[in-house]
Image (cartoon, rainbow, N blue to C red):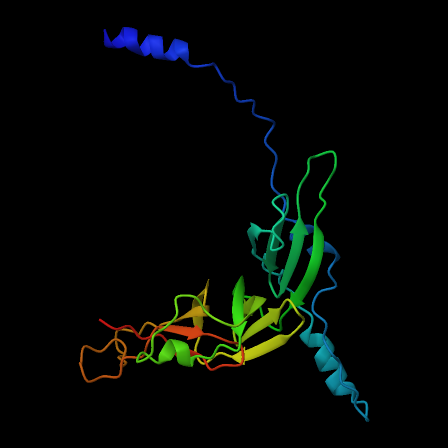
Amino acid sequence: MIAASLVANLDEKEDKMIAASEPQEFVPHGRQQMKRHPGEVVMSYLQPNFHAESFLSDRLSQVAISEKPQLVERWILRGSSDGDAQCEEELFIKDKTAVWSRGAYSGPQSGDCSTVLCCYTCETPIKHALWCTFHAGMTDKTVLDTTEQISDEPKGVLMPSICLVDSAFIKIFSSDGEDYVACQQFQVSDVWACKYGLILERAIKSAGPDKSNAENSSDPEAVQLPNIFSLVHPLDEITPVLGRH
């Protein structure tokens, strides 16, 4: 009886067929752009006197016998910021350069119609890269002052930006052309975008078997440094995130 009812239900439904096209390999647009990118630009300072020894040592320092290590590339995608459902944005990162592009892949015959919006190059390899949004006019007081009522939504003028984190700096490039550089107070192990700005995680150094520090100590009086920090505005200080129980 149960089998007959199942057959009857299958007969009532319309047959549908899903046609699968030939699978294609996804090639990020930033990879193609990196082949045409001039790379890092090293500024040479003019010296009044020419020194042959310094010139030769500088040239020899650029010579390496061993092969260069293979650079790891990565990318992130998101929907278009202008609301176009047919387009997407890509942030491609490789070594010291990040490429921000926008477009859509229409098909194998039409080709890639992506457009490069901007390229960023840092002094050291980029560890983290992401899109984020700050709010102009919003200070860190609204986040740190727990005595006042905190609004669920941040107030202020929107500042869509791109954040690049290398080994020493946190660089923020806003969509209106403003650039900000903040020195890292600690090594950043990870970073996330939130509605209030950025959330940063401090890298914890593991102590050896013969070493001990305040973070790994079981002494309750030892100073325990926070691990999570926030950045509400590029011009503000990086402040720790505190939780109430």
